[in-house]
Length: 339
Image (tube, rainbow, N blue to C red):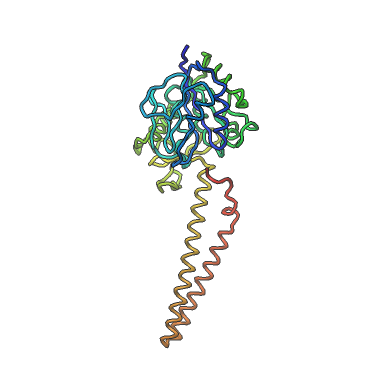
């Protein structure tokens, strides 16, 4: 018997091991579609569908844009593409990256929450940082079900831990227990209540459209949140900021999106890059001024040469001052690297 449920799974570092264990325990007649967003390098040739087919009884393949959702099949996001749900079909797009990644777990989860509401079952597996937290928060607020791999069971516990800190999760289990749990959930009729406000619904619709790649009108973008005065690290557009539970998120007019835990290291990295450019420029100025001073000496202009050397020494002092800034703890201890 088919279910109207939809299972969406997000994973990153260590996630393939978790996915293989999960699908190995699923029954051949699993009654709902399963969509997977696993972080892979953009130019990577992914064999994840083949691995999932070998590990379990369900057919698995890279998702194709526009194909219908079929119960009992596993659809995997292709590298460098978002996997989304759009009117009971799959949307495979190269929409703006979230946290500098495509596919984005959050984008997949939000689209499922938007399209099927309480029928969505979101699953966060092993991974670094916090991708999946925002999307799982949205699924839960729409009345869906939130499932998280137990952090102590994950090779990389950061993604599960982030979800547990920000979302009222329904189930926290080891991955070996997840297959029977998901089977039970998709066969059950119980669903939660949609708690999103009208404004939240409008924001969700706009964010799904942004992930698809559709341009946001200025009005829709401004309604996402308030202007932050921060620049997008990807396109340098202005970011709007808004809160989801205890987490701040940011999105630019072009559609790039960031959580605060990813945006801060990117901004600090930009500051470090700019300072190193300043050091290089000052040291090049010192070198050039020294050469000009030597030329002035050979040309019988000792007074001009001394003035040029004064400028060279000033450039050297400025370079040293900027190097001191580069040793600042806020730059040298940026925290976890962006995935």
